[in-house]
Length: 358
Image 1 (cartoon, rainbow, N blue to C red):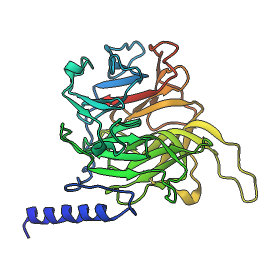
Image 2 (image 1 turned 30 degrees about the vertical axis):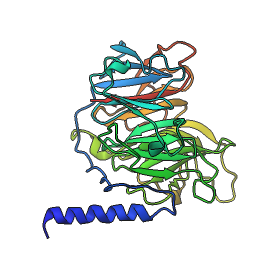
Image 3 (image 1 turned 90 degrees about the vertical axis):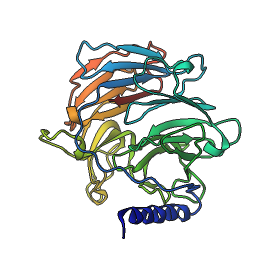
């Protein structure tokens, strides 16, 4: 059998699996299912760090130093009353979204004025399935293939726009979240993330504040399943992302952890819950207790890892301070570098995000 014929058969089978799986929670799937990316070889470090503070984006040169200042400060959606959602793809494209449209900007990013947009795409029922008024996006993320994913609170739905996004784009895949009777029942989405293998992770909360991290692996044919841990701001490090010279290329899961720091002895009461920045070595070991391997007593509102530099960056939840830590995290570690938030007192503790760009 020719290679092209075999490839077409594999794609067709994959599309059929997604179309018929998930008990009605996954669909529609026009066209072929895109495959997960090949795990990357170690690549040079990113050139830029984007710091998002409630609608203002600060662009920093990397590597950071104690004297680093933003080289550019940009309003993400001029004249929009509510700050937009924002995402950066693996090639450095930036997408910003209001409740009615998405604008996409090609690097180098010099302005978010509408005239600089490569594309503006109206949010329609064919994209969000929620009617003509648009969407209530709580997050927007690019996956490793450059596909754009929208996390919509209206109806609890995740939709995918396949790359390249055009004016004719519609949702290639939708995943329901929070429906009664499903594994996610009672939870409302808060954040979405992807690892290098295109596995989708969703951090979600109940109305009582209980949080859980859910996972849905490619080809997204099943309902997301809980990992059993309360971990916000999750980021994932694959050993392949380190440079070949790295002495400790570990697979890691990082984030803001709420829970116990030790597994109680048989018959003993559980230890009091804590709220700390935690690190888990992967694969996770549920039978041994999902306890962080290392942690730092701090609360962060955003986190992103930079494996080639063996660093990761965080924004403090209160005050928005930009901190740099060594990777992997060492318990009790102190920031290598700390930079004050420049967004003003009213915005430094508002919604925060961090992005790396080539």
